[in-house]
Image 1 (cartoon, rainbow, N blue to C red):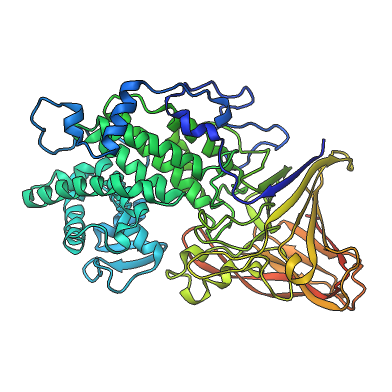
Image 2: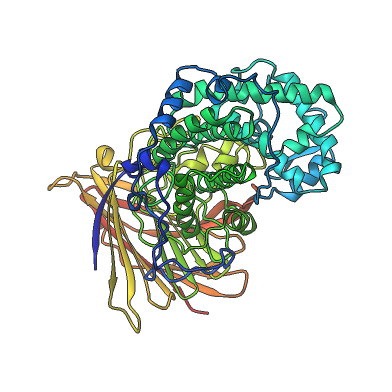
Length: 623
C-alpha cells in the first residue's frame, strides 16, 4: 500500500516524553527478533520491526515527596540538607566503581601510552599540546580532549595499573590549564557533561594513583563541574549537548554523596532533553549518525552508573535506548559500516557493533521511516539508503549538509554509489579548507541546479534557507519475478530561486539487480518560466570502483573491487534544451578513520528548460 507523507524538518518525539520518567517498561513488539547486531546483512525491510515508541508508554505521576525534593533542589537548597538534614555532610568521594560495557579504541589508547593523542588518524604529541586552547585545534580534537573520551581508549589499551600514570599526567595538564569554570570550549555544556560522566565512570584511572594532590584537585573539579552543570544544563539549547549536560548531572547524583536530590532533578531534565533531541521513530533530530551512536553510548554509560549503585534506572532511559538502536542499524551498509550522512564519515563496523552490543539491544533495522528521514531498501545483496527529509533545523544541526534526495548504494560489502562525507572531520586528515565543500549538494549523489546548494551552507556547521518540506510516497509495484520497491520523493529547495521542484524516483527490483532512477524538474507555477538552466546529476563512486565510459558516452561500466560488475546507462531525456553529456570526474570519499581517498564520480550535465525536465538512468548488475 502506498503511503504519502509530507515531512517537515525537526519533528520531535512524542509529548509524553516529558512524563515518561516514572513509566513502566512494556515488552517489545512481537516483530522484534533476537538478531546479533554484528551481522552485516540486515533483514528485508518488508519484515520490519521497531523498538518501543514513546507513545507506547503510559507515564505514572511521580510521588509528591520526590516532586518537592526536585523543586527544592532546583531552587538552590543543598543536596545534603535534603538528603540528610540532621547529619554532617559526608566527605566528597566517588561512592562506587562503575563497570561500563562500553569499550574504547585500543589503537588510540596505545597511542596515548606512547605519548600521542590519536584523533581520526592524526597524531598529536601530548608534550607539545596546548591544553589551554589559545590556538584552537580542530573541533574533533577539542571534543576528544575536553570530553575526556580518551579515558575509555586508554582503559581499553592495557591493565589499569599501567594506564594510571598516563591518565594522571594528561589530567594534571588539563586541570592546570582550566582552573576557572565557564570559560572557553572546555566549558561547552556537551564537553562538560561528557567529561563529568567520563571522570565518574573511569574514576579509578584518575583517582586511584599515588598523587594525593591530584586526587584532591580532581575531586574538587568533579564537584565544581557538577554544580556548574546544575545551573547551565537547563539553559542549553535542545540537542545532544543538553542531553550530555543532564547526563552529567544524573551521574553525579548517583555517584557523589547526598546525591538523591540531584539525581531526581537531573532525571527530570534528562528525560525532557531526550524528548527534544529524538524524533518519533527514534532518530535524533540532527539526523547525524554519529550523534545517534553517541547517544546510545552515553545512555549505556549512565545505566552502568545506576547498576554500580544498585539503583533501578529511570525506565525512560532504557526505553529511549531501545528506541535509538533501530534507526542506527538502518544506516549500515553491507560491510556493516554506516553511510556518509550529515558530515560524518563511514563509521566502521567494529565501532558500530561494539556500541550496539554494549547496549544489549537486539532488534531489526528501522524499516518504516518518518522523522529520521533515511529510507532503506534491501533486495538480494543490494542495499539503498535514500535521504528523503529536509536538513535538520538550526537548533539541532551539528555539521549541516545539503543532502536532500541523495542516495547511497552497496552490493554486499562493496559500496557502489556513495556520498563524500567527512565535513565534520575537517582539520584532521581532511583539509580544513575543503570542509565547506564537503557539506555542499555537489558532494552528494543527487541533482544540483546552477551549481547551487539545495539548502544554503553557512559557517560553523549551520544551514540557511532551502528545503522546507519533502513529499514522499513508498510502495511495492509489480516486477519481473518479485515485486519491486518504488520510492518517489520531491523537495522544494530550488522552488524560491528557480521556480522548480526536484522530484526523484528510485525503483529497486525484487532481486536487487536493477536500480532505475528518474530525476524530474517540475515547475512550481502552472506556467513555467522561460529560458534554460544548468543542471548536474552526480553519482560519487565507492573506493576502488573502476569506471570506463562507453563509446557513445551514454553509459559506463563499474567494476567493483571484488570483481562484481555494474552497468550505468543514461536514458532518453525529455529536457528539450540541448545535449546531455555523461562524464567521469575526480571525487573523494572519507573513510571511517577520517582518511580521504581519491575516487571518481559520474556526472550527467547539460541545460534544462525552466519549464521543467525529465532525466532517467539505470544501474544494472551484470556480473
